[in-house]
Picture (cartoon, rainbow over the protein chains, first blue to last red):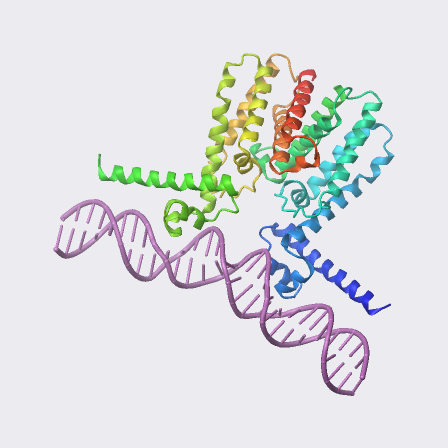
Length: 202
Length: 202
DNA sequence: TTGGAAAAATGAACGGTGTTCATTTTCTTT
DNA sequence: AAAGAAAATGAACACCGTTCATTTTTCCAA
């Protein structure tokens, strides 16, 4: 085990340490309310040190962005065991909503926040593209068994994604309080039920 | 015309002056990228002066928030001349999307941004509530002519709002680039067409 | 074991932010 | 014209992301 290897490992560990602290703080106080100095203090290093491991604050955002997508994709794993394409589609929606409900802040970070994402490399969106491709494939499978005939896959997937995202986004940004007496989560559940009913009839 | 009256008017004019500058800058560079100092410079006053007319930056946000809703509600006016309830519903959706497309930043401010909204008074959301009530009434009218039977109005309105908001939000926050070759605006149009088709069959 | 080079960490400094408030300027009234 | 009230000022405070000259630690060859 060479020194170089250890150095490598330590560098990786330090990146983890920073990311862990950042994640905790972001999920606690929000992205913009968390400063580099806050993160530095949490790990008991000076602010400057952070910049030896992440080029800028956006880089940390980026890392958590990827992490969120990996998490979401992992949750989608069991879908491969759902034989019926349409059932797979609805299950997918349920998982998506579950993710949004249980990981509000990750969801926010992934789909709502103004993506700073220095577009120098396009690896920002590979995970997102992967997830979207997943949806499109399920829709193609649905078409193969006679559903959604004649619909363009891009248009259809955008429509479905929009509906799911709309619920999640209104939830994340507290717009459900427009229905003051109703519980947001049941509102979402009922709304989702209407959606699947509608898709089934379509 | 008493002095007090003029004073009153001048105070109102100053608030307008600040709001106009703020609106221009917000729509130009975004809310967070616009500082009080920027606004002050634009109207050729010192930063401190702003605080004599608005308690804090969020207050200016709030004022524009209301302005946006008044704008949206004004655009909905012509709906009263659409006799058929379902046609009125789809027209409403078209207007909503048109508003979002043409007033990206207002839309963002009204529906996406983390609403700071010091909840001390609840007058923050009266315009929003008004707009939502509008949608609910159209849905009740639809039910009166036999559509959407047995569906809860809250659930239904939330579902429909979610879909519209989803498209608008993905558009505003540049998530349409997931469909790299497609034009976001046509993607929205096609998606909206699918939605109305589906609602019609429902 | 030690000396010097390389790597890592530091924290002061820069130019920005929202907000406050003692002070100055302007306007109004007597 | 003088006094009092209202309006405007801008320096100051405590924060922000980021940089970089300096210090500390680690490494390896002599």
